[in-house]
Length: 297
Image (cartoon, rainbow, N blue to C red):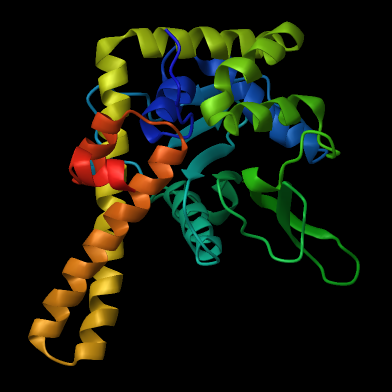
């Protein structure tokens, strides 16, 4: 089954691919590719702590991160996928790291019982200014000597939009992951190449095919896309509505601003979806616009 457009960054699919029981080798390969690219030791064993749940929903997701895992030596690894964002994500990633680090300390533990937390953030937007590196890794270092204070804080940013197939110095395994995560409407063509050169990508492609052929799983994907855009629209409505309302200065102006913000967001989303050749009925369902309105865009 070939899908014209399939976003592998969809939270539901990501959780299926990396956090489903039996997919530990796929998760370990991604983590180790990131580690090797940063000149860090790879891990031999990974245990998923928040296993994939067929019925999960983006609006009631219990975990603050998409994937959480533990190594045999006690390191915690958290993986977050973010499709839209800005500079404030830096503080969000620090908060997620801090919360995971804090929860590692039990009531009767002492501070030396704390274990490293490795944060891997996969971003579909540019975050780090004045840098073209698609993969950045941060530790706590002394300013002049570059001495690393501790290995307990390790934060990675994979900025997908900075990746260039023809000009990157990434470890080959991580480069393959960038190609997969960037595939979207070119997934079939991308995987045709990757599966011939990288055994783990054969496993990834097999799981993708199982996923899209399952009605339950693909419905979960579709529902997640709908819920994701609903959450996005709510945020857009709130921000635009407040801005418009402030300009009007009265209650009626606030309402007018909210309505205008909703409509503009719907139109913008629909235009982007049309560019990606998404089914017009699905666009209508996700945005709330009529088919006639979408055809005019």
